[in-house]
Length: 623
Image (cartoon, rainbow, N blue to C red; front, side, top):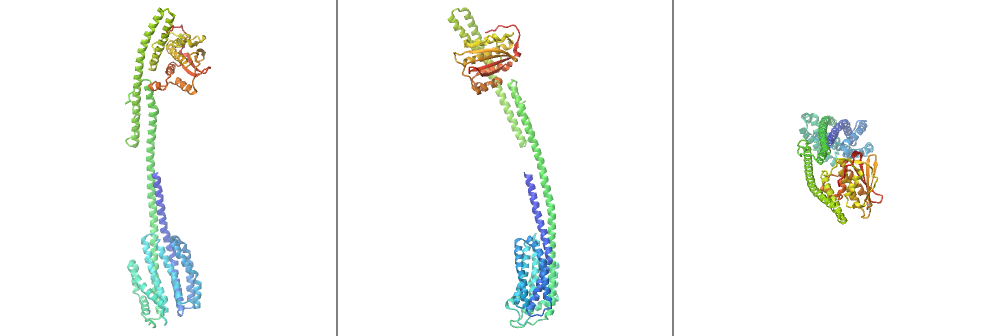
């Protein structure tokens, strides 16, 4: 985003420089295209004004001279119209207002000419009209100077406007000179105008001589020292110094004065046009220079922007590459190494937290700090898991120790009960002894539960296979309410490997105990069995209240995938017997599944796989 923003800034800067250079070039072209039409229009207006005022003053004008001057003025107007649009584009709304005022005066021109030809127009009105036309030209020149591309060109245009004022002031004074030479002279207003015009252009030409360059200053000095300038000045002084009501004493004839005035005016116009050409050339040079600067600046800014973009792209790719590598290595640690460490801990392996520490190395910058934070989090997780595993091993060891001690006591108790049963013949007392025997057997199984939960194996073992029927009867015998349990006489005649007998007896005893414990006291519990393709299935059905669908789902999930033994597991589910059944089933590949029985209770289906069945002579069952 910063690179794209830099590119946008570069484009914006280039657009600004391009617009500035284009404005300078348009300004130079406008000045160049407007210079000749403006010069021609100024001269045409001055000539028609001079002849119109002379004719109204009663001076003899050469035949067709006024008509030729009017034709020249009309031609100049048509030429200038083609440049008005360019002036308005460069000068804006202010230039548009000047052009509109000038156009309004042009619409009155035909009527004014007819009045001059008829002799009905006062001399002052004719003079004022043509002066207002050129005043509009002065306003346009002043306005266009405000939009110069730089201050130097603006200053040159201001000095050029001063030269135009000198040319126009002398032309106006010349137009009034013929009228002032008449016996009746000029009106007080025109006389004051005449005197101000003469004073102004003499003072202004002297001031400009100090501001223009050396060549133009030398031309002004040569002009003011010329004979024509002296003659024109002498005629103007003679008219200005005349007393009111008297006829001026002219130092020369009007023809001589006019020749001198034409010569001075021509030199002033040449000076004005030459200086205007210098200003136009300066504006063209500025436009060309800005065009070159634009190209250079756009190239430099564009190159910097592109370089910055490529550099940021390179750095971004490097950053993204490091982040991708950090992600892949982090996922490898979180999804492969850490689960493998947990698996090894659960299997009882000894783990050194230092050797299992994560080794993500990404430097010391922000990404490296993130990697180090993950290393510390991984090390903390491994250390906590190791601590938990050691605590769990300690708990299991305590359970196993207590269970083994209890088992020794129960075995001794059963031996004493067996001896007492053999020596006793009283039926009532024997019944009591049998009940104590069953309770002791249940106590032995509880002790074995602790050993199984601790990861050990019960002390009872068989070396030879045992018939399934004997095994089931042995499991029923370990139940306190054994009288409620009915075993189907048609159990399959199969043998169970001796190494599995103890655990299978324990498994079936827990299921039978659950069936009798969670069903009404007067109800019965049925045990049936059938051979299957996968082995033998033993079904234990009760007539209790049953379980909900969600309880069946949770119980079957635990039986198929028992959780790791922990204090939290025992506290979360009080059915310790099912947990023991699940652990025993997983140990030998025996699957247990709970469903609803035909009586609404629970049916436990125990599938004994073919792998634990054998064909051999029966081994005695020790109860």
